[in-house]
Image 1 (spheres, rainbow, N blue to C red):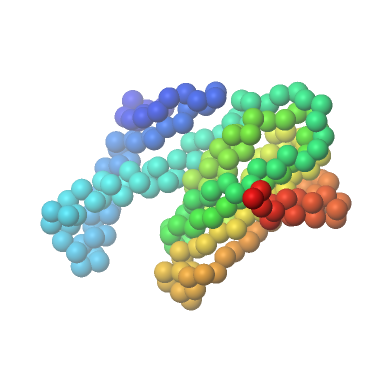
Image 2 (image 1 turned 180 degrees about the horizontal axis):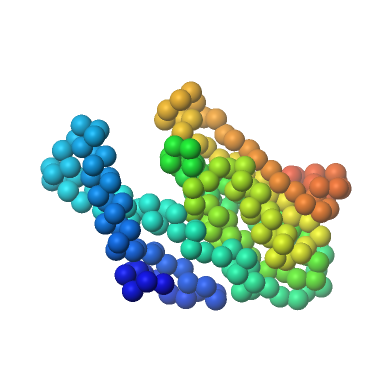
Length: 211
């Protein structure tokens, strides 16, 4: 880590959760955004825009800080041996990411399940893995697969299921401008892939209400 990295945060559960600002990168990105504002017909020297390039540069670094995280290490920091072999479901995990095609946000929810095979993981680590992959330039399809593969390869469970439902601003604000469309992606391994009843149970659980 460079001396120019500014860290704001603390060690949590074996890894560092931070807002990472690298002064050199901030300055370089901000310079480009100042030029972009001018190209768009704005005056980057007016009061409301004076600090906008720096703010955008910091925002982009935060929104892509997943590149600096190791999702498998997040899981390994809280793995426990446990004789439990029923489905574990964490649903309605908030997802915020950026489409790599237009660098516009997409957001929604992820629903994740796994069937332990000798090891369980601290429940908070699953949403952290989602964030680690989501805070990168992404497409929803790859994001879904990356979450699935990380859990499968690290925990070696009997199966993993991931369903993601997101709204994409690249569809809502531009292009076809369909504000109410939702994109759903899914990825399965093991028992969820080979057993229709197991997969159906997962889908029932993520749509069921606790009310």
